[in-house]
Length: 443
Ligand code: GLC
Image 1: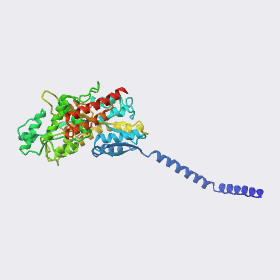
Image 2: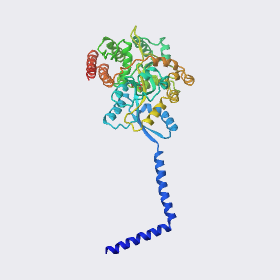
Image 3: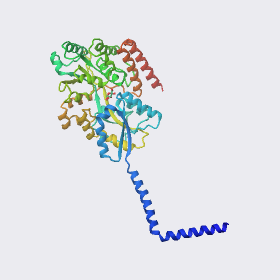
């Protein structure tokens, strides 16, 4: 039986061999086609663009998508997947934070507000870019934006946009009541009352009063104008329970109590304030520079009627806009750091920033663009904006900023909405902040 079967097997092999030899051309062709398919398949796979992912506020994506598209057009080997986040910066920070804490963060490019950087860098979530970006490349940047991109002397982000808080006012309404732009807290209150009484506008002043990061940014300006401070980043001294802080809160509360600000102002973010101001409903507004081109757009009822200056202050004091601004860092966990870096470099490039300024009126982080002929032709006020951007007040650049800001936001909001007495609120805020900072310096 076994002899029979082995004879059968060997004769089959023989026949197959003879068949192959007769059709060798056909066989060679089939092998060739097979190898070709495999080869071209691999080639096609290797030419698929690399996907990098980033998360941004929905508002910023709407304004900045053209930069992402321009980058993709110039870099067909990279595709940028943009994830829309909420508009409050601290909520986007929370999303990034939880994704890093859970491990395996899906984000390659980390679009960062200036106040997040110390925390993200201290936690080790970001790639150190110090040796990747030549000093020469940073020369044109406003020094504060580069400083705000560093932690312990190392660079972790490329700034592509800066920000500084401004006080906007309606030139026409001030003229109607014969007033000069206000200098002091009392000036702003008095002018508001005059305009409101003459029915020039329903409200005097709109600002960011909601419990979120914008409240802290706005408060830093008023606090500076009252001669106070929040946290000294060098000594970690806390100034929230000093009399100057009460003076700052008193000004804001007065605007609500005296009907100068709408009662709902304690729920406003930037956009709520801008919409009310732009519709002609208020004399004054605290906001960032992005609001000016929108107020001057063709369809805006207040086009050409808006002036801006630094925040008002107590007599004998000075104020400054809070330094804001955005930049891109690279997640240490990114599987595509080179592609993400190319993207960050493009976003911070002169070409991209010029386009961002021309389209949206954002403040660039590159100094030369403030006097760029195309930019000035479109925004004649830009050289003045550079002075504003270069003299901004800092929110404390400390690694525990998110927690410190959360403490201030909670107690300040309670004080402004009348839930807690302002002195008590700030005593508690100061103590909680001191505990936080002590825990940190002890560890
Ligand atoms: C703007 C600023 C940012 C700030 C935020 C507050 O986006 O650029 O620095 O934290 O507003 O709402």
